[in-house]
Image 1 (cartoon, one colour):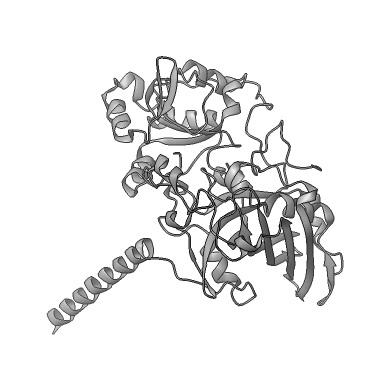
Image 2 (cartoon, rainbow over the protein chains, first blue to last red; image 1 turned 180 degrees about the vertical axis):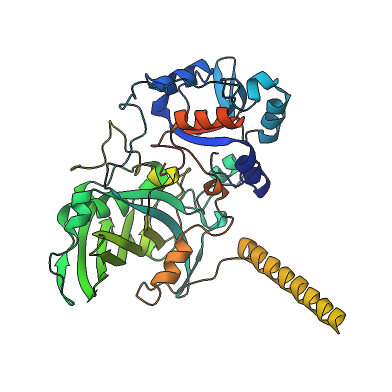
Length: 356
Length: 97
């Protein structure tokens, strides 16, 4: 429920912005051997089922509210966390627990890198990625709604009842792509001339296609990337479009054929495929490089193509037939913590860089 | 004459603010504008814009999240605020799941 629109009303968002310090964690961090892990354990966040949990807790470690309920040894989730209730409890606390500076936070100690959130290596170029499923209407696209999603081949929506038809799927789904310093530098030819055309370096193309064009990551956490067998075809090239003193402009063109080809019944839009998937995006991108700064100042890419198979973010729904799936990539500075979120489920144990 | 000008300016301001508010609400509430499904240099910007989160679509993204609990904890203690922790099985709760 962490991103459910039912909770993220304008009112709750404003309450959050004004009254709390928000932090997002991985379940792995409960096991950290440093002060972070100790704080979580000492606070009574004792369950390891941190997944999808919301907690409101004082700096002193007192839990005010959570959407996780443990009763008679059984763990269940409430639909929402009572944010107003949490803030009322906070206000009722004595000054010794809530006044600015009243609680002293100790040193972090040696960081437990095995369980801490992965951070981008120095010099990493960060692209913010968004996935969004559309529906086709004639020659145009429209946004997906809950009513478009099928949960079996007959078009039943039984699972929708579980979440009160308030699913997160129609939201743009965020991720990040990292390019190591040596990688992004390899995209720029030494002496660019307008019209020069060359393939995207193999390592970057492979990770872009298998990891970031992976429609499965949008529904079931298969974010480590597709197997090589799932790539039927892929081609990515860069063309130098313009060269000036302060800017070199490159155009990226490409396409990929991933997964299976749709069956005739799926192709005809008569059923939603529950056990097969496929995605055939076209890619287009515009990159700008500043030779003086030796840095990319623009790195915009869009992938758009037909997809079939499950796509629902949390409950694995599918759209009937073949429908468009769009993906954007955009350069970010990385100066906001939210822009430094690791790609997929990357961690020390599940490295992002390197062959898969 | 001055009073007339002031009144007219006030009406213009009021009308403008109502219009701006209406447009703002329209963006937040109305169905999105369809785009051509053919990706090319002409449709690139519009399709990219439509894929990205729309106004009010994912308000959880409007919160300045920390990824470092220790850093957030220090800030919460210094400012006298509670911590709001969102945990997930992914790398964090606010990225890919």
